[in-house]
Image 1: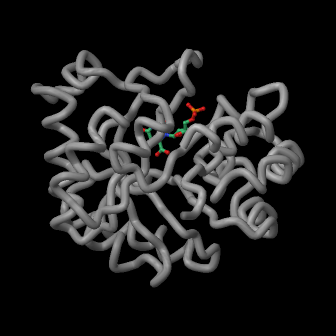
Image 2: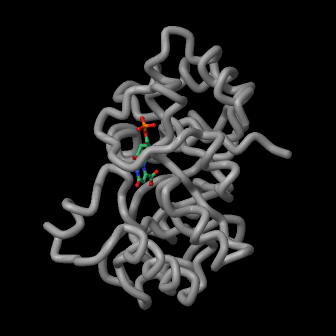
Amino acid sequence: MSNPIYLALDVPRLREGMDLAQKVKGHVGGIKLGLEFFCAHGAHGVHMIGQLGLPIFLDLKLHDIPNTVAGAMQAIHMLEPSIVTVHASGGRAMLEDAKAAAGEHTRVVGVTMLTSMDERDLQRTGIGGTAHDHVMRLAELAHDAGLDGIVCSGHEVKAVHNQWKDGFFVVPGLRPAGGAAGDQKRVVTPRQARDDGASVLVIGRPISRAADPAQAAREIEATL
Ligand SMILES: O=C(O)c1cc(=O)[nH]c(=O)n1[C@@H]1O[C@H](COP(=O)(O)O)[C@@H](O)[C@H]1O
């Protein structure tokens, strides 16, 4: 079984990102490059990290009208990402067009409810009901639009997995037992998420801010 851990490389400097990725390379299955990295280093940065030989997860969380999102998906073809994110709440047409415009080997996954939000935050955006219901609704939309899977917290992954057996599930908001949650509000342990059906475990600060990132990644891997 391949290593499901993707390191979230949320660092401002390319050199620092390269060093970190190099250190943990043997203990993760891929590298996630998000908005912070992509805004700072663009395609050049993605190429540089790609040289390490690990799959690249381009977490751009695209959310716009269908034509614009499809254009963005086409523009990143040449980066050959293994996974790309779009916001599931962008609607069915946007999701369908995103998937149609993606490269053949790119999984397109829909972000449902950010792990940094709880139900109070959700209500303030005008959406009533529970986190569970909201995630299940968006998962169904993503499925019907032909996406490969979704991004959700470890609180919902089991229920989504039960409904969508062959879906691809990305779970962030992970903390080893006793780890500081920081800005994350819906957290579980990496092991819990794995047991509940996560395909990919996104882990950032518990590895990147550890005194010894390789050791931290190794320890997390050993719990799986
Ligand atoms: O799409 C994501 O990867 C994502 C979705 C979500 O709901 N929550 C979430 O934290 N993420 C990303 O997962 C990573 C989590 O980082 P840490 O909290 O440092 O482990 C960050 O890069 C976030 O951008």
